Image 1 (cartoon, helix red, strand yellow):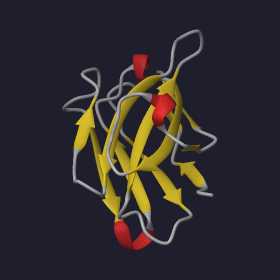
Image 2 (cartoon, rainbow, N blue to C red; image 1 turned 180 degrees about the vertical axis):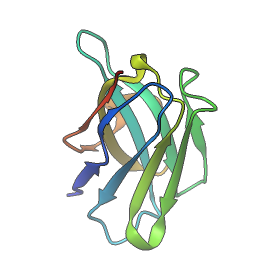
Image 3 (cartoon, helix red, strand yellow; image 1 turned 135 degrees about the vertical axis):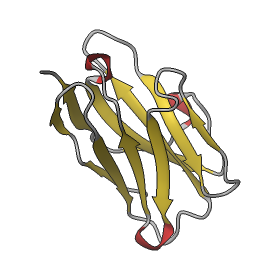
Image 4 (cartoon, rainbow, N blue to C red; image 1 turned 90 degrees about the horizontal axis):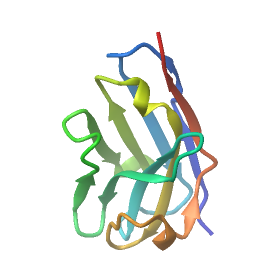
Length: 123
């Protein structure tokens, strides 16, 4: 079983930045994709970004493209989501999740989930 732990959330002003981390308890991430999802109160879960260590694919939702960057540190089995130019509408609980091999935008395809970290963008 894979365990995922998110960290790095918090309160930030509009236009600010945060870096989220997702640490995975696996021997290697080489065969996994890590997805980032978010859910705001009263809204459906949204796929934000994904990186696949298996085939190298990366994707971003249109709502975060050019503002968010996903990277990985294979030595630490950790994936990061660098969030810049944050907007109030980015406020949500952010989750990382994993599945084998390739990325998909559909959360139901991911097998393991972290508990989430709150991101609040407000002045």
